[in-house]
Length: 431
Image (cartoon, rainbow, N blue to C red; front, side, top):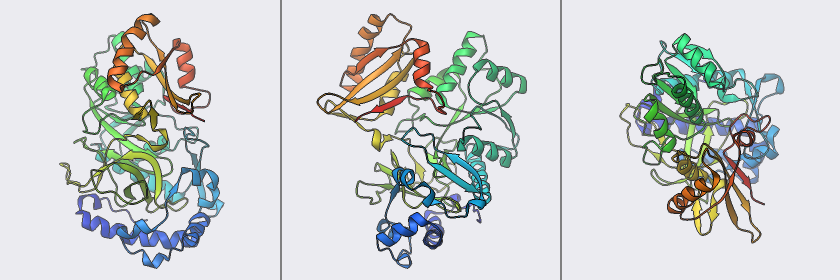
């Protein structure tokens, strides 16, 4: 594939012309090589030569994770001998999906992440401490690893966990940048405070953050982002990606949304009828991958609720910018007449100092409606915590969820079940 790193700086009309041509190429490729999409296009009676521009995409069918879960290998467009790496989704939203990458896809992944680091003010002179796993078929770990190498920066692979080891390595090797999950950064802060490490005078200047949102819809830091920045005033860059899309949306220094890479992905925000919404309106993110050889995607609905912005960014890029995720469509909770998403509950709990750890659970109660339960660990006596917490939750959520208290060890087990790659903060046990 021919990459065009300058496309993001060109006017949207030029980006759309480029993407329209790439879309036509993709449709020809899918029709000829993808068992799943070839069948889907036939079933929907799509004549691909009638799809000439991005505006015509609304006439194409959408796909979702459940399609990949049910027909995983029908998405593969190449012989198995051409596959050079197998990665997999985490399985937090049902059965894991395997994503097969060719040599070309691995090159594309490196380029994607190199451009992401450049967007997040990365330079070849930087040293990145990578606090993510590279094993367990985790695509993000290998993508960041390859992207940092392609950037020309130095790399320290510490993997996840063990704040003592992370700080020892940081102070010894003087890495000026980290790649980490935001909630783990809170553990680094806690360790630093307990061991007299001055967070205002240490080597790290910036953090590329994965897996959790740092900002509200207005781009101000949310409770988690604010808590990190208050104690550790470094530059924070949010990212948004998924294994299936093999592409990242990354914030620049302006912190006004994750930049689309227009040579790698077509972005749509869809209403409930799969019609595209204009900038500023919230809907479901759908992506169409460009330049993927092994398992390309066409109008793939991610389940994430966002909006996008198409004004020119102060960094000089004209590319569309994706908002922080409001929540996942599947995870929407209707609780006692109130509609809410788990991230809104996380944000409230992150702001309460006497709640140390939590897991939010939703289940179906005996009358068939959603019931919300918060699993909590607190240093306070349980009665005190309950007395303080209930009015706080009532005022913020307008409803009072069930509360269940756990020891630190039990919470650890709940958040990190055996074989999990990610910290569990939400349990959906609805029937």
